[in-house]
Length: 617
Ligand code: BGC
Image 1: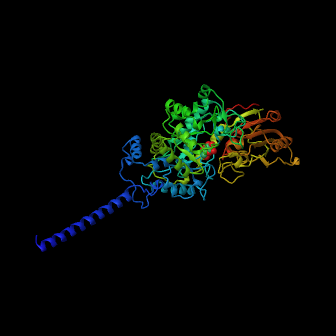
Image 2 (image 1 turned 60 degrees about the vertical axis):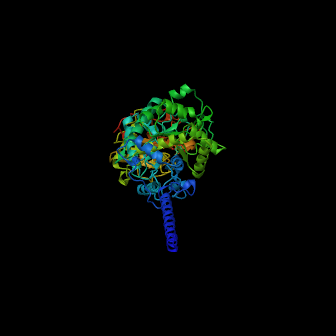
Image 3 (image 1 turned 90 degrees about the vertical axis):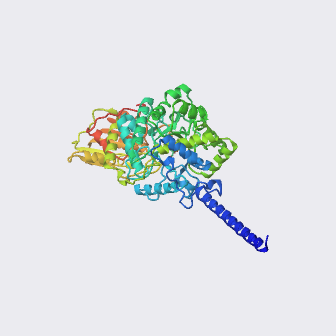
């Protein structure tokens, strides 16, 4: 070989090598680019769902295809998910514990909630809508763009928002026994919730109340399993039939199981007496009573069921695989997802990791996390690595949650702001109708209906001119509010608007009427309980306060006849006093539309309510 050709060959080799090296480097570079662009970020396990560029949104994938069934779409989406993404779907985080909104994408969180009273800075319909929209934007900028469930306790309307219609609490609807009414109210509530971007409500409460000392009696439809089942089912139907161009609202039947039958003194919460307590019941008795409404809610296809904070025969229900899986899934055929209540998985536990493992394996699909989601995420990773929770169980829970999201239209619907749907005239008229249907006559010595032409009426009492009191708790704040600063009509105003122009209505909070002005033909005392929520309302002997009794006594002295309207969340012990009163009406917690009370007091509507729970007179 000549010198020239050898040199040429060397030159050629060099060129080829350079081309190969550059080519390889280029290929590696583009592979790396593609890798980082298309695959989840893997700097740490927790960052896998975070897309920094925002360009990796999915497109035209089977799970986005409307033509496929929800099952097919769910399976497709599930098959694309990393373990971390699946774990994220199981987390339901209280919005006030999210310190960095980017955590929603970073942890791929599945759901957020506003615990009672947790509101946006601007507590208006628009403020809510913007808050939920901002959260949704965080969730949907992830690799697979999975929207959030956003949940609230809309138990008597979407009452976190001032201006929302405040319907009577469930105990009043229990007295109405009117399933159509309950369905309409549930629908209206879903509509008001959706107007603020909310797509999930923790309602209906289908607990069967058994003890008037319990602070949650008013959240229930009462103590009759059959009535509670009928109304609970109607409520689920009403909530889930709302459909705003594809976007719906999911219902939650709560609290599974036995939450209304806990025993006085058994609470595991040191501040409470009966709430969060223990239920001693045989399997058969539990099925015949407390289980019945859950059967009905499942028939109505409730998307979720919330597990209570109570125990059954000494064991926390949240850890009870028999109840959560054997009965609920295998026997009742529940297809939605099971969510835990507040800190329920960890409450009173010394080993949070073991508690989580037990709850998930028992059948909890989504864990409510009021305080900390980072530990939850790490513990789930650890449990899967250790084999304490199987991959199959994780897939099962994730599938149920995703399927509910598909069925609720979250992947297909668009958030549409309709702040005008909040507190509409129609909804308030519905609430007024509900109030009149919920009133129960406990005693009536031919005084009610009162003539609209009665010359002189005195009105007195702590609940006569107080929308906060007539609305009860879970209204704007967890423990309710005091006074007249949300829209509505007080019972006093309802009375004033009802009577003839010739009738003189005088009002005094504590019945300080000048005796010189002569006797009233009728004195109406509107008295009752101050708002309370959950175990804060556990009271050994619920009765009227001495101030209320004093007011009634003073009113009686200046009135020919006395009508007592009791605003309360439960039956009160009034046995010693009732003989002194001419008429007594149970008004429960009527909500924002006090005219509904006047409608019955003055005979525009008849009494149709019947006691939904025993009231021992
Ligand atoms: C209550 C639930 C409620 C949840 C979220 C808990 O304290 O027991 O009924 O849905 O809080 O606010």
